[in-house]
Amino acid sequence: MAKRDKKNRYSGIGGQAVLEGVMMKNKDKYAVAIRKPNGEIDVDVEEYKGVCGGNKLTKIPFIRGVFNFVDSLVLGMKITMYSASFFEEEEEAPSKTEQKLTKLLGDKADDFVMGVTVAMSVILAVALFMLLPFFVSDFVGKYIHNASVIAILEGVIRIAIFLIYMVAITLMKDIRRLYMYHGAEHKCINCIEKGRPLTVDDVRRSSRQHKRCGTSFMLLVVMISVICFFFIRVDNMLLKLVIRLALIPVIAGISYEIIRLAGRSDNIFVRIISAPGMWMQRLTTKEPDDDMIEVAIAAVEAIFDWKAYLKEEFGYEVDESWMQSKTQE
Image (cartoon, rainbow, N blue to C red; front, side, top):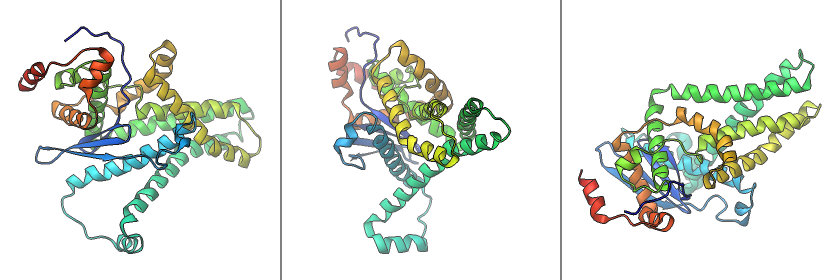
């Protein structure tokens, strides 16, 4: 194999950890690889064009981030339910509510339930990370008569709630394996974008932190909201609340553009703004074992020709005999 440079290349691949598996997405196609209870790897490949189906609005900077966020939630919920189906011990009888929904909506019942679940998730996130800090700081504002101090306090509370939440879920025993698969997902993408062959050994020595991670996106949303709300101030409490809610799509759009830039550039500015998210990923990713890495590799290979990518971006071909010898080791 030819000598390759050390500069990362953008691959366009994104992913997510699921129960005992990994989802990898490339353009409109995604693959979910699951390590089944019997040890085999199940790979399912599907298409997902988003809730707007490629509408022109999804291509406009700062607006596309909102659609991308919704798509991530919808697809994330779908693949999570799919992965969980492999580990259901016995088929439970449908509840009365489920029976009514199936009778009323037919094949659309699952989509309806998924939509409601996604909506509730967004509402809970907004309540926890946006509204709770606002009401707490407003209460404290009765005793502190300085608008700048209150604005800073609201920001500190918002960041503190986010950090406490992230630390709390890492303490859950079942989450650890999910975070190990999260690490395997990142390692695979980093391995490819570093110009290395997609083997277990090369993936293992790759970093488990990635600048385009959803963890970094969430942290950016929190930090950008702190900055926006500090400079945008009004005295009326109701108007203040309306402005916060109205700015959520704007903040999500800005955060998405920064994450998108981070995936395509490695200058000093990008490294600085990416640093907090990369640090946070020390909590949300763990070192995977080789079995988990194999699952992540299977997901990548189902939707992405990494050998052609290495040839195009790094200028070298992977020798098939060398790959076979690595597989047999």
